Length: 624
Image 1 (spheres, rainbow, N blue to C red):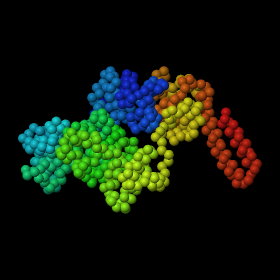
Image 2 (cartoon, rainbow, N blue to C red):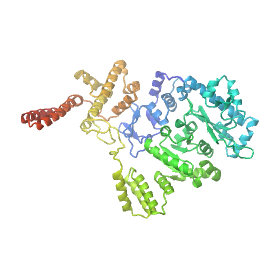
Image 3 (cartoon, rainbow, N blue to C red):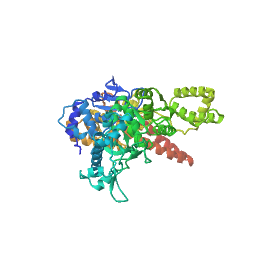
């Protein structure tokens, strides 16, 4: 089991490492005022809205809303656990600490139960046995010759730990029994099955080439077995590929082949190439393309997309060029649009219905690399290719169907420039006037479901906005926070950063409470933490003490508000008034409005006059 990193080690690393050095490896930061700004690494943006606060070691994106400290940045950017993030920060920041991080790097195994650890041990032992049979023994020479004939180098065979299951379907079982694994565990692994005929335990993959299916940290979770051709070169009538069944370790809907080996290259080139099959991934790696992943014979799932999204925001679909592959790419594009619209997706369509493996065999590795780089289709160009497959443009009805399908896609584009560009292309392709196509586009847009005004900035503050506390107290309600919450956040910002503000509030308003539950909860936690820490209090340390991610995210939003350095009694009084008295006065106004409606229904002029007088008095109080 992995060791937990002690708090004092985490604190020591935090004190030694500057968040600017870590973030600077991923983001081009420029100083602006007291903070540093750059383009957010977590989503695509043209205007920098990602900020790093050097004094308190926080980061915050004012567009997508992500924020936190150096460890949460590392967790988000590398898709790793807290333990791994601490180890990475220590390594990248050259922190000097007396702690062995090797015991913390295997994040996946740390989550396994004892039974699951045992299943992993079975898979590792079987993998080693299969690989040994293929690469060392006389028995494996024929299979090795087949692999080399298919273009597999010894380096690739070792890299992917390819093996060979013996034809004797009990030999591997007997081998693993010598390692004291129980029959129940061997069957639970999915590698072995109990025969209905004689109740003997046999190897599911007997006689097949074995491809280990490894988890994100390289632990073997399952296998895929490929049938070998016989002496005549023919394959048997058995299924060409046989995968492990789903087990406690292995679920196809949550598994991506090659993630452990591809992750460094994905980080370097900032892109995933998504193939249909694991053999395509291996052959692409042999050809020099090492950032490939594949799902295991299943359609792309939401879990797959989120796994990819944690690694990068750019994806190239390199599915097979036949009709099923094109259909799979079409479905994948829609799935990405629904699950991860911030991910940029392109498509490669291989010619002559080839799959990537066939393309490499036919044209060679160099041409394959050139094709992957230079023959990409944008989403819209892929849709044009796809719909041309389905509609006959030589007929009027086919052309009309094609135009309608393409315009439906154009209508969903984000910018008018993109729409204009693709309308012109469609006009040239169909020989129809651009104005006619524009009219059709407007009709489609009117018929689309209304989804409200889109905004890329869903944070409480926008870059370049007037972010003083006075102006924010007058701002209209925004999507992320109400006017009350904005006032509460500004007061909390002062309490968080300014000792004078804390003293002012406690002296003048000893019984003060925030109106919103989440702010009052955070205030209670802050009060308890300040009492506990005394002079050792710091906003960053308070952030690290919070256990709830929602509290952490709210605190980052609060801390990153841009407020003047000086705090005054008047500022605190105004904020407290806005939070307490003004909120209550607004409630009174709302109640008066209801009473006024009732008085008008009965034409009670005396009551109406009295209510108007009270309304004027409340409005005067609100203008204090």
